[in-house]
Length: 253
Ligand code: URA
Ligand code: URA
Image (cartoon, rainbow, N blue to C red; front, side):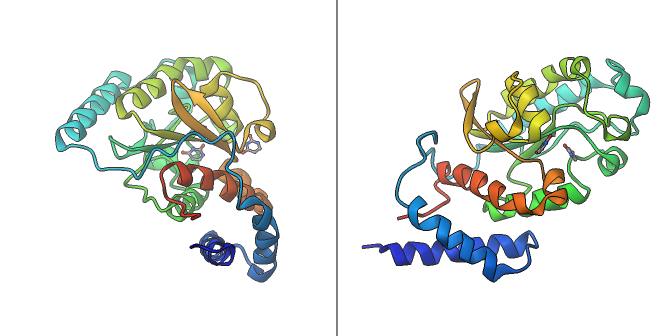
């Protein structure tokens, strides 16, 4: 039988690894807090968590190729997109990257400076942190798919305007339709409000699965927010553990 102590040991080991990965210092204090929090939390299931959907599985080579082709066609449809004013300020359109059959998809807000220059999502400082979060979740960047609400960098990284979001949204919706991920992680307020079409604040929304067309969507803080507020990393770890759990990645028992 697995004892509470065994479970706690594993939880502490996982927490230690995560904090080390994301560069949190003063580990002993963090770990003490983690233990305090885990003792009561270890027993009940999160009532909002959807059922376990099991370990991610590699898709059939045919499906992989078909999805890849469909994504390529979608990218071609965007072409040298001039559908909104963001076109004027961009260097490169950032479509998205990753596994065309991904079980897990991360949605950000829009490209920043580095992304605009490289044409890839989440390749700057926030991207490094996102990579570490993905790895701590026992996924790799190649296994997941990463995309943004708007595909072109807003000037000075301002929030995208509602009409810019509206203009770009059908492309993200189509990406999700093609990839058919089994779970989504929505990074930050803009991603969550835009995709779910709600105006609820991020603090009220985060930490629970929302429904996006039948796909469980976990809302959490944006990695750029975590760079400014490192204390919130603990919260994000709690949020993404719920996602790990539905993929059978968190052995509590
Ligand atoms: N922030 C985002 O929301 N998306 C990116 O691709 C990079 C930073
Ligand atoms: N505000 C946001 O827009 N996003 C976050 O993740 C946190 C605060």
